[in-house]
Length: 128
Figure 1: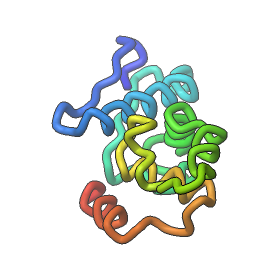
Figure 2: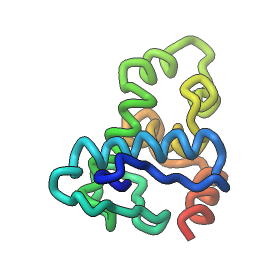
Figure 3: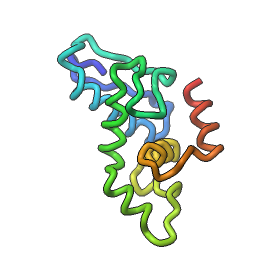
Figure 4: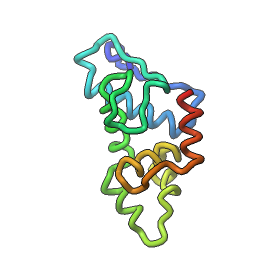
């Protein structure tokens, strides 16, 4: 995020869903921290945490929670999960987020106890 230039940069090598989440995360930086750090802030994969409330190398961590709530509002996620026959892990396309982002949202809302093994593997590869 470069607040003075009013720019957000995201990697073109990431999926559309991942870039969308990154932009929401950066909007969170702007709203939460732009006045504190007008020079800008750069997040790297290694800075991010599964728990949006955990501190990270890119500010307070609140920006990830902001992005999650903006793109996957809790009431909407809960409503979809509670539908008869719902597959919570199939919700990612409905919210236009990655499977990994949806998995973390479900865990952080207490709707899953842990990431499924394949999503945990994706997380480990992505942050490396």
